[in-house]
Length: 71
Image (cartoon, rainbow, N blue to C red):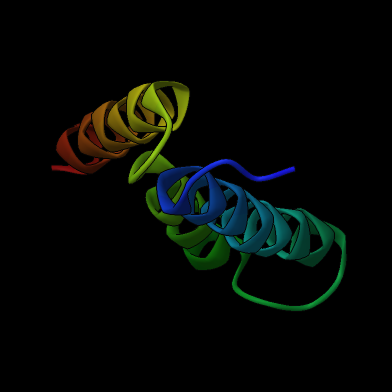
């Protein structure tokens, strides 16, 4: 059973963020903006989970490297 509102918030964020990430993963194969949806889901997850914050930081680093490489 859920013991506190903080736990409930964490569970809801995990469900919502996880669902958005899964939808983004489907968009890799299906038509859709997966490169926008996946980071959006990870950003939602990053509000409660450290591993998601680290993953967002890696995405930002890779994006910056790609952007600087094109210049």
